[in-house]
Image 1 (cartoon, helix red, strand yellow):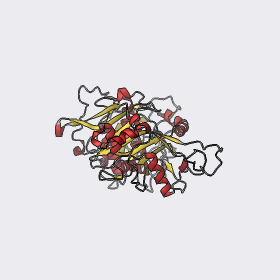
Image 2: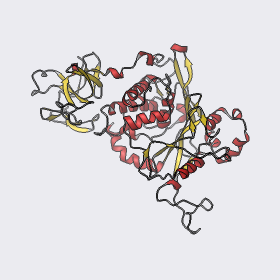
Image 3: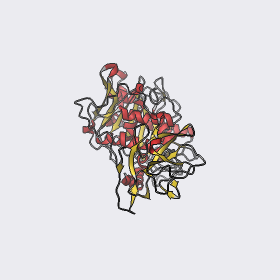
Image 4: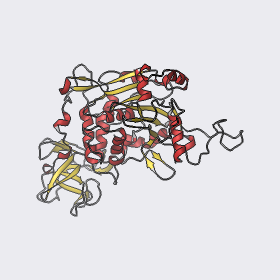
Length: 491
């Protein structure tokens, strides 16, 4: 049996990062070991055990030598402390003989020999789902082989180094809905970093840290440091979400970004909703539901947002850190408008609760004297647009903040090598003129081009294929980052 030991001084207390609590670490505490099926098991491994003839499932929370006061049948054995999925009357809350080894809800803590544990078969990747994923990246693509990157890695700050073939997230087996969304969320923005570092709470599922770890250490961090993520790591996340959420078919079928966000944020990571409405409702994204205005030839997201909120009497309770807006279309079949111009800056002031609407003529507070002070405007910055065409999702992403930041285009399946038995090649391409094409000064130029096919290809995809826009509030994110900094240091 191959074991990895930690050797602190006797009586010394160390912080166990995985569980984010202070517990005594003795010389017999282990980081990993080998289970009954010969597989390496460690903290946060998803395992199955057989109890009274039934297969039960749990997550390893502690590994160590059996204490001297343990049952004689357990002495001199390496034990695993599990948090089980289901409660059982004979289980504990992470204590053994009155001593705490880890924390979990009551009646879910189980201690047994590590050799009785096996990898959870529900999460084994089926061979059919992995066909075409190379064990190693193709030669010559200059991809860093460090595929698991731990810690807190900041978003990429130089768009030019990201722009190349074999950059971004490798697509495989209808994964574009997820690839494009993850690249939009994490490549150049920290807007969603809170979900990478939030400590597990009692209300979270037992597999919370396993899902969070795969997302952070095998996808987001490698994307930011190595600029490339292999499809096999994305498949691990897809497999977990497919099993743990109500969204079926995540490992192989075509899905939409909102289904992925529902599975990841709402059902698996139990994330605090981004949007809080004055009526008490909460949501992760806002679906535009405007009445079609035949006079609008090139509507902006700002126009459709204002019209939708006014028509539904929606009021936001506060400025969200991020605002995901789903444009008025239904998959690849229906589009309310043939072209929609994403607004570079979104003004949400007039839909905030307890903020009087401003006069559109003079800019001052409505129903007040013209010399009244204007309401401070609440602006959000566009940082990504996910697009769809012929069932394939891609993303335009801003490489930084500010009006002058460059943009890039990402396609997780831009090319393919090796035919049916080969693999997809992701690519990131710089487009420095995106801000110009989305500016008010360019509107007339766009309107003068009557046929979509006469627009530059990247402009056509951005205006005609838009599916979802991502906005962020730097003021709210700055305040949030200050609160989350202690959690990042744990990693």
